[in-house]
Length: 269
Image (cartoon, rainbow, N blue to C red; front, side, top):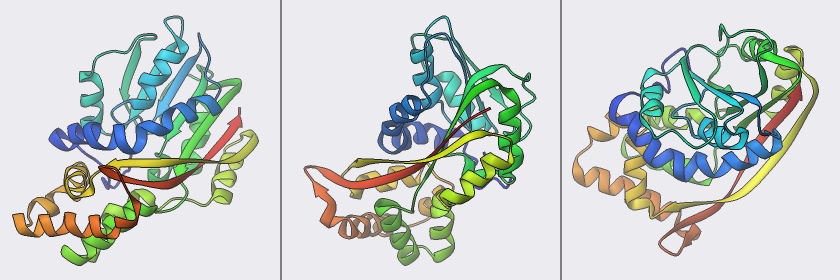
């Protein structure tokens, strides 16, 4: 995803990403992204910055056996996990390790291009979107999503990391939420040659397991995993306890629930 390795995960971290991040943080947003992109049976779909493939697998079911899906990511560790997972019903998925700004894919070869929470990691966002425009058929559809803010949970984890580990670690953890504004996203898409560029806000109530345990597993799936692993057992427990305290007002049942929002940009080639 990023050239500077900021969110390059491999080995157990990529596996933990699939276990913690995908089902609880990213996965619930996937149906909304596919809906707003109007992904249909028989279409050819490109999932950019696919990670471990949650969007690609859902798209494969939507397009069916007559369609096709390609998952593209710069991160070898993420793709290794994507390839290891059971193939979904529907279209076959091709996994490719490549840069979003230089996909090397044939021009006019996809009906829809999707990107969930990846654009914020592209060093040259306009260049990446320009290449995505190139691979779309005329009238093909783009749908990209980014977080609208740091969010309740990430803010709490960032504060806890700053308190127990250090501000640098907190900053690196929160980097995935350092996103372009809505207006900036519209500008990138327009500069890349897209038409009918629109900005949407999607909302949902995010639900996570009890934070005392969840946060430590989640952090093991991020670039700050080694920093947290280096902490003593009591210090890690204190970190989880601090997050739980900060999220106490969000307690619901055995976990926490809080509102989240994403910006989604749609456009046509």
